[in-house]
Length: 252
Ligand code: 13P
Image (cartoon, rainbow, N blue to C red; front, side, top):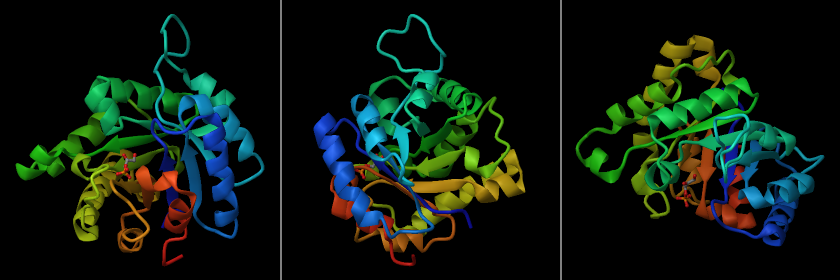
């Protein structure tokens, strides 16, 4: 059983002072927690300051996106080296909001995942079906396509080099969550896929996170499932006490 991972995705929230306040509020509330890894993903502008605030703590820094080129004339983009420079360990890639609003298709996501792996960052590859796809019974098909295409051309040797996040699009920011049992079915399907793709051991060790309206009152049920190894948390991570409760899920 891999070490659970809880990731706070702050999305486009928080100025620099607000972000530092939030992480400083969070740190004492999770100080006693052992055997759970925690990462925070502030907006780009706050990565440096939040990185400084978590120095010397076990909390890891994550970026919400990245470009696949190493440098060049790409106005407005951020390279893997720039993220490594700030001590980022993780990078969220293929989030449904990037797919929906910013043109990140399967091909773009695969290039980003590939570059992140080569450049020593740990991609958090996000996958998940829309409401329409779910209603048409296409959940497994969509998730399978996104996992396979997202990893196309990439080499993953160990389970700690990659994280996958299953975020049903209809559950993001809506207050609706997948039932733990339904999420487990998708997670188990993803686990099977990565095992056949990357080998039994690597597939077993990869963390598969659940995301989509994760809150203090539903985290325990989700974490009780065999193939749910953590959470990617949006709204509830903007409140230090809520996120701390998620990190301290029951069963810990
Ligand atoms: P919410 O927790 O606000 O539903 O967001 C989920 C998400 O998109 C995390 O990446």
